[in-house]
Image 1 (tube, helix red, strand yellow):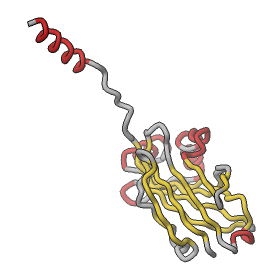
Image 2: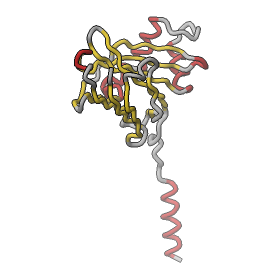
Image 3: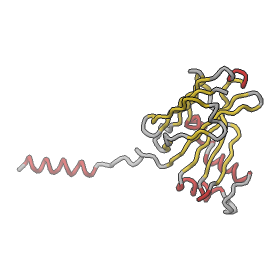
Image 4: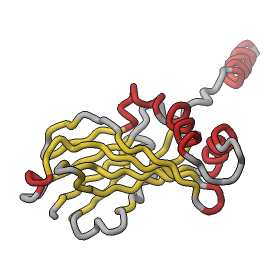
Length: 188
């Protein structure tokens, strides 16, 4: 009888233990990549298309005139409140060029509202080499990952239009739980 009570008490105690609610993503991103040359420098072109829920949050807070288009002032609001805060996490990115880690610095941040009010970010990350250096070809590895497991990146990575010929052997694979690692050759 005592054994049954002890077992029942133990089972009840297990049922009452708190369950972690933070161990799954809340935000979802469809990434796309490319490489562009600007002013003699090579840049990784990054595009993130957000899920409907996060897009609606951004638009509710930043599309002040509710016209479905983000003007320059509204884009600055998105950058300030919905993007720059992940700078301390290297914008959820790691970039390697020919095996060497490149610092993640964001340039040219833009926001677009797509059909069905989906928000898309687009920005560039300098690769630390000139367009001239890239002529011989470069091995690039890009990792999108949020270690907090709050943001999930789709492993079906897009190649930006007009850049498919320059990117070869593009391979994407899941990284840890919700990240994606992309490897490819840049061959202009």
